[in-house]
Length: 166
Ligand SMILES: [Fe+2]
Ligand SMILES: [Fe+2]
Image (tube, rainbow, N blue to C red; front, side):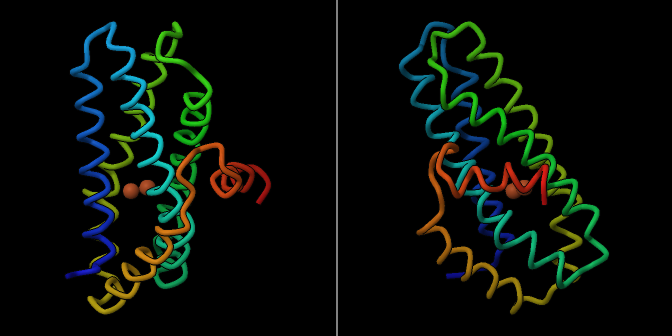
């Protein structure tokens, strides 16, 4: 089985976009279903963001210094999504702004995923060899086991602090 880091990241993106589509298809008053979907979205995003923040972005930044500006912009886009995720984690599906906040989260994340897939991943693949990407993917799989699953867990909140004081 390939552990190519970019393949693994794209699998996560595909799953997140599938959950987004399900949320968009759910009926106006499908509170139980939408609550479950948002929990799944928050978990998928918390794990994925952790792997990019703690493994992929720092390693790429070190190996390919030319991509530093892209990495810094990505940290900021993650941070905007983190804030929305942390707020959604405290809300109930019947709350007036629950759907609106989820919609903005989906817009922000969809934009970010598109930038990664169309601009950033090709640059990373061109700059790193197959072996480096496979080793990175293997580290991601190991880290996945200890990744935070909820936006309110300390290891997920740490990056929110980093965004302003690091
Ligand atoms: Fe990202
Ligand atoms: Fe990503």
